[in-house]
Each structure stands twice: as structure tokens, then as C-alpha cells.
Image (cartoon, rainbow, N blue to C red; front, side, top):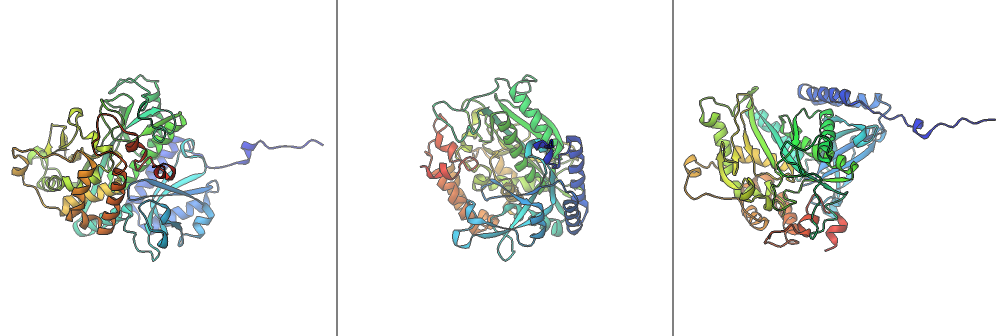
Length: 482
């Protein structure tokens, strides 16, 4: 008697959604998150997870104090049955709890739901960001996504303010998988394209990579505006639309995750080291920022200097005043100080300008809707939650630098090495108030540990130590092989 065997592929019936439908679902979820109550959103999501039988796992994301993205896949049924008791070992995460008090909790942020492209993340999964809590369910002090979310709720309630951001994240695509972990200082990274700004050929590796990553970003509701090769060979940038700051920071984490996964599928590496090559432009994360009140952009004033309001000027002058002491938040790796090089459009001057791209803050040409400040001295490896949290608190609570002080003859510059940035951060009272002493000390401790593994003088070649001990690159094996 003949037996009927089912092909292995027919045994699985996991959720796979076309890109056009994904974009529609993700944008609908975003709109729902902005208009409905948290309880209503949770009810919708739980009902969806129960109803959709083809979802096999729920991915929860959180970021550590240095900005690494961590992901846990929960069985859907287990997650729904255990929502009040989702725990993980915080002592296994660099910069989180010590071993003797290791347990931390995760609380799902239901408003952050994203439906994922199955060709990038695998079929049958949905992703949420999570808030990290202590054992007693109080907010965990080193979870800056949670702190950013609380801060935005606070300024909305007390001042009626909503903060928006749009980052411009540059990166490089280099040859080979795991090129950062396998970095050889004698050989350096290998470029995959010799093209440059806007003119990479349509089907070369860089353009194929950009197309694939941008398509996935659009499907996840990023609302991409333009995608292109950047000035340096093998360099890319994909711009997506303004968003409320928590969602904007989530987008940064997902943007980098998508880029890394797409590159890996092509046998390449997407790197967000600020300066992986000497002699060509480095990568930045220019952070466009504005505040609105009652739906109106309060950074705009048609009659104001450069089209900015007095509120915008006060905000940016406070950032300029405290720039040296918060530089470590904006440029948190040894390698990032190579980028602050005045020969390559480096934004290392502590000043504001509408035209000079060497200025730390630029004022782009804009209208009532798009008026903003552009903080150009941010590296792409900064913790996006800590970055935006710091900018908001500095701009609202810091001491203002007067306009006369910005025009004085002696120009001020940002630190040109991480050792000086650490020293300035250590002595900063404002940073202690913003981060809290515990988180400030913890953050500086890890920056110091990475700095101590690299020479203070950066020199003219990228060193292996500044790559393999970089917080986005290193792992347990690399870190302990010193």
C-alpha cells in the first residue's frame, strides 16, 4: 500500500505578509497607538495574538545602557499566560544588574507593535519593544527607553509639549560576514563600491543593499523619504520621516537591525562604526529635533532669526553651553572621535550656523511644518534613547549660552578623544541630574573600560582594539581575549 508523505515545507503554516499589506498594517497600528488609550491598544493586541493562529513567536526588544539591542523570542501562548511575570537575567546584560540581584522584569509596550517582513526576520513573528522593570515593578534606572517614555509623558502633561525627531543615519557596507569581529588592522575593511554621492550604479552591491533595506523599512511603517549612497564609497543613508521621539529611537534600532540582516544575507557587513576608514568621510547620525504644542511647531517663527522662535534658540543655546560635558552621550565610542575631524565636514565646532556644516548645530531651511534644529555631532553608534533623553532635558533644564557668547572670537571645539570626553562627563553636575548618579557612573565605567583597551592617541590608522572592543561589536569571547 502506497504511503502519502507531505513535503516538509507543507508542514509549516506560519504567518507571511506581503510588503504592501505589511506597510498598511504597520501604519494603521501607528495611527491607533497615537489615538487610542493604552488599555484599548493592549486589548486589541492581545485579541489579535489569540486570533492569529499562524504566529509562532513574539519578539520582545530592549536596549542596554550603551544602546545594544537585545531580543527575546517568547512562545505566543506562554507570553499571553505570563504577562505579569516576564523575567530575565539582568546580570547577563552589560551595564545592567550585578549578579547578586540579577532578576529584572519586562513589560510589553503594546503601542510599539510591528509586523515584520518574513524574508528578513523569519515567518510567524511579531515584534514589540518592552520596558525594563525592577523586581518590585518600579522603573529600572538604566532602561533609557522607559525613562524617555516617562519623560515625554511628563512634559506633555505639565507643559503640553511633544518632542519629535528625525535621524539621518549613515553607515558603510563592507565585504564579508562578521567583518568587524574579524577586523585586521593591516588589511582594514574592504569596500564593495567605488561609487559616491547619488551615483552608485543601479545594480551594484551597494544599490541592491539599499533597495532591499529600504523596502523592508517602508514595510515596517518608517515612511522613508529618500534612500541613497552617501559621499564616501560604500556608504549609505536612508531617511525616514519625523516621529515622536520614542518611536524615532525605536526606528533607529530597527533600521540598524534591518541593515545588518540584509547585508548578512548578501555575505556582507553593515557597520555603524563612525569612522571605519581613514581618508574618507565618516558616518554620522544627524538628529533633527523640534517641539510642538497643541499641534503647532513651537520652533518656528517667520520673523525670528533664521526662521526660529525664541523657544528654539533658548533650547539650542542650552545644548551648546553644555556640549562638552554631554559629548560622551553623543559620541560614546573610541572610534567616534576620529569622525570629529575638521577635514571631512566634521561637526566639531561648538556653534550654530545655517550654512557651516562644521558647526555642531545647523539650522536647515524650513517652513512652519519642518522648522527644526539639526544636531550634527551625533555618531551613529549612540544609544538613541539616552541621546534623545539627554537632548530634551539639556534643552529644557540646562543653562543657556547667550548669543553674544556664541559669537566670541575664540571658537570652542568638542573633545577630540574619548579620554577628555570621559573627564568632562565625570565632572558634569548636569549629567548627574539627567542620568542619575548610578547610571552616570555605570555608563562612564563601560566607556572607560573600552577606552583603556585602546591608545589615547588615535593616530592615522584605525586600530583593531577600537573596532573589536566597540560596544556594538564586542562579545564575551572578544572582550575577555585581551
